[in-house]
Length: 401
Image (cartoon, rainbow, N blue to C red):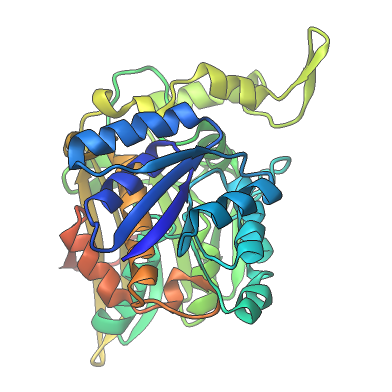
């Protein structure tokens, strides 16, 4: 049994600590910290009501390395689970090194002033964590996270060689609201408005945002338009699976969502460039974030399912094979269990499982690790046991371009 410190009190943090409290044989003591302690206290109240487990709460500015280091030394956790904003990854990693504690996150670092996310900043910590004898696990969410584990499981058990890999992310949930983002609006809108990018024949192929789409019939959801996008797991998959000739990421969006996004973009509301307004400097996207519904408030409103998976083509025992590994998650069932909708659930549960892998020693090592580098089997087993069951299906043909 081990102590854990979770930083971040949004929907993902809420799901993670609820699920940790359901597994006290692994997580003996949980502390939840955030800039706004009242958010932590509300989650702690829900955890106590749903599980009977009491968790501690604390206030922390995760940008403040010294304060975060002091909190870690006070809590004395075996692991810090970073579920705060991606902007804060490096500061929390620095605090973990300063306090001699292992680290886990669900999304790679992104600078505040540039819409760019990549692993280079965190991979640069490899020697520091290795020399300290500490482990840092990157991207233990769903995508990134589970999708990379699906790929690793596919290579270990289903295909001798992977030639192409497509990641398909469908949120078939409906909030009944005209426009809302199902996770942090700043991060969500940055992702959607970024140029598309995929890996093919040893190089990155770029194109305009949302310029290529196709219809796919998602089990449990139905036919949806999905769009070619760039997502962070493509970078780590291309690094650790050089044999794969093409790796792509697709995400579904409804027409209404895209129309709102187009209008907001046209009037400058999705910009991250500072501007002057009534004598003070503001960032339009931060104002937009303040106007949009808080994602953690969408739980009771959201109906429908998510469907996220990987389609891989390749060869098994000398024969061509296409395999589809996927999970389907119900928004209302996720809310009934944890008080959060399925987008938070599908990230918070893998964060808990990644933490369990590290705390139980099933995943161990010194240095900075991506999900692709570790044994998929115990993680896949826990997905089935803790609310994210997966299936494997053979397809007659690969996904078309």
